[in-house]
Image (cartoon, rainbow, N blue to C red; front, side, top):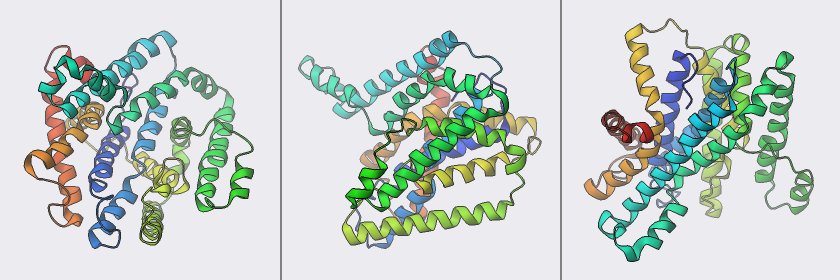
Length: 352
């Protein structure tokens, strides 16, 4: 979400797309745990879910490109401008959702102070991303130094280790989750680069290899992406129908389908030429891109209250249409609110 380097149209477009993907994730899973896995509605939810699970990894990959491409990095500025703001934003939104959960009237009662504190200490599910991002940002100086070394050999090594010990190991553990011997063997060597930080450096490395990656035919990338989405959806459908397993094990961040999906989407957007749009369009895309953090934070509130206040949800009509329709509506409302909040002093600074 960093904007301190020169803007790139392809990355702005990708950020907006990733933000919309996040909304589809939550729109498609709104009734995913409720519907019968054997129903058509559930299968459609599941297919949408499979198609957009790489949204958060893509966000992290974008941050990797923006930070590691800097010619200079100030640790003091990193903490004061980026980490501190994310911490404040996290606390404010945890409070916002805590008050929303209790209701403003109840939240203001002194006897409910501890309950409100608990709501803040265990905030809304999607806010996990902010402390995770803070953890990655703390590691940025180390990644940045490695990125400046000759031929990026250290980051290439780190990417290789991330793929082997995080992506492949997690995938194999999911495949053989009931095989204790295999689990024991794979867990003998603890490897710490298993979180989203691996995607942070992977995004940078993919951008560095852009001149080679953009030569891959778009139809090949889209075909592979479609195969991954469909196969993963069918695997999760089988697990849900046969075993009642709704964990979405193959939708996790550190499994092979999600990794491949994120990489393919990233490369597809790298193929967008810088001169594809006029200056006015670029300006509009840039502005929307700047609002994506706010949209990410507010969209769950909009999604939930469209249902509780107006009875509008993805279960209102056929899921094939309802999921994208509700997602577009949520994105639009969130965007309008972002524009309005930006005009409010102090609130605009710390909430956008």
